[in-house]
Amino acid sequence: MKLLRKFILVFLSAAFFISCADDNDTINTPVRELGKAQVRVIHASYDAPAVDVWVNDAQVISNLSYGESSGYAELEEGEKNIIVSAAGTTTPVISATVTIIANQELTIYAVNNLTSIEAIISEDDRISSGSAKVRFIHAAPDAPAVDIKVNNGMGSTLFGNAEFKTIADYIEVPEGTYNLAVTPAGSNAEVVILGNAPLMSGRIYTVMAQGTLSGDDSYPFNVRTYVDNNQGISFVDLEVATANVKVVHASPNAPAVDLLLNDAVVGTGLTFPNNTGYLNINAGTQNIKVNVSGTSTTAIEGDILFDAYKDYSVFAVNNVSSIEPLILEDNLAMPASGKAHLRFIHLSPDAPAVDITLTNGMVLFGNVSFKSYSEFTPFDAGTYDLQVRLAGTETVVLELPGVMLENQDIYTVFAKGFVNGTGDQALGAQIIINNEVLGL
Image (cartoon, rainbow, N blue to C red):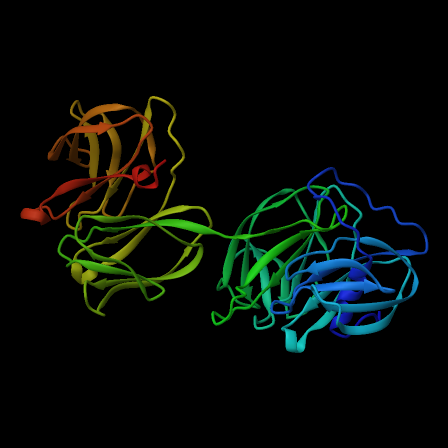
């Protein structure tokens, strides 16, 4: 298909495009008169100006800007005389004769930067099916070849090894809301996770990576989803997916610490047994460091995968010579009315396994050993007198009177300190209200 291979010809077919209504209405099957073509232009050249297009001396489209779709229009086959000018001017940038080929559905994309701008062309399939249809186009010039995966870098691959200017074929996927991970080809390391992409049955989507990875310009990397149904003018930008992460200092004899995320300091001076509250971070694999406060001495370091739109607690646990992370996913689903959710975590390094009971001996959480934990468990809202007992015995090692569980709050209680510790390091319990910081 040898059609419009020079830069400005990308815009030529735009001359024929009619104005289009929002595509979020009823899906219509395209009807094309025999002998004609359906063609649209998508402007994906990030630093190229907006343009006006003239056909046989008549202006037919104006101000087509970066990131916009002109929408599909029905074109007569044959040769057309086209003039393209910078938006708002009549000085031709190019004057050319273009041959339109009948009985095709095409999208013409302007890609690359202005000095190297060129066209790539896709043949489109706008016949709806019972599933969602989606394809991927790599239009970010400085991005490497990528894979597109479901959920995270370890997820199943939808599109593999897509290089710049790749136009992947449509695939069919079940209707749903997807998180899409962009990774370098053959790697599990996420460049970005894009969240809440709604793919609806009967809809046809072109997902395009565009902009640049460079932080030195005003054209940030993004992924835009164009809807190919109807006139093909609608689009939505996929959002960068995030996760909420709370870091808890639970190492009784460790000094105050600083928290670094990908070597950027996000919290300082965190002391035992306090926490950061939830930090909103980009989803994906993130490097976490826990440094001795005010120094470059790293006590804990690890690459941790945080899935999109989930909530996590990272506990720094054990005594200082053996300090390590304990990473838990937090289920912050709202408790039923009249209920509260509670979990227990054993974080006293030298304490044996314990039971958490009521004063009458009723066991709420049984035989919990160091670094073990319960799931969030529903209890009636109210005030409880709790006891920590040696597992399987009536020996009480810690009284926890007056523990108040408020209606629809979510709590983590963790055992802290040392059995024979004194002062701040004494055996005790710390309570975190998980949904208080999130404002749920």
